Amino acid sequence: MRAASLLVCLGLLVLSECQPREQPEPVQYNVPAEVEPYILSFRNEAAKRSYPVSTANLIVSFGALPHTDECGQCQLQSGKTPRITLSTAASCWQQLSANERECLVFHELGHCLLSRIHKTDRFPDGTYVSLMNPDNTGVYATCRYPINENDCDKRPRRTYYVDELFNPATPKPAWAR
Ligand SMILES: [Zn+2]
Image (cartoon, rainbow, N blue to C red; front, side, top):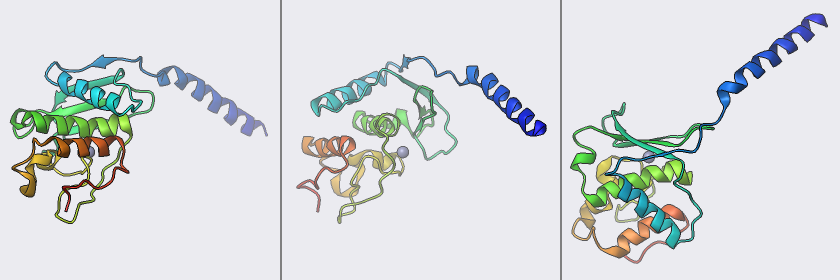
C-alpha cells in the first residue's frame, strides 16, 4: 500500500513539474516577404468561400528539408504555432513560377491550417484530383501535368483546385476527363 501511494505521489510530482514546459506558444505570425502574397491569396480565397480559417498563428521559413524531393513541409505540434518550411534546394522555390509557388504554399497551408492529409486520387486522364497530392513539386503545380501544360493559367482550373482545397467534396470539374 505504502509503496503504491509513494509511486502515485511521485507520478503527480513529475506531472506537475512537467506542466510549465507544456505551456502553449503565444500566437505569432512570421512570414518572409516573398511568401506573404500567397498567404494573402489564401486568406482571400478562404474569405470568398466564407471558410472560417485564420492565418494569424503561423510561421513560414526557408530551410533545408531532409528529403531532397520535398519542397515544403508542415510541422504541427499540439500547443505550438504551425510551422511551414520551404526548401532552399535549387530545384524548389527559386525555380518555381508564381503559379507553382502558390500551389506549394496552398498545399502546405492545407496540411497546417485546414487539417488536410494527402490525397492521391486522379481523374481518368491522370490529372490529380487535389492540390493535396503527395508528389514532387512538378505536380504541386497543376500546370505541369502533361495534358494541361497549355492551359495552366485558365481560371476555371485554378478555381476548381482551390475549391477542392477548402471542400474535398467539390464535384468533378467539366474539364476533367
Ligand atoms: Zn504534403
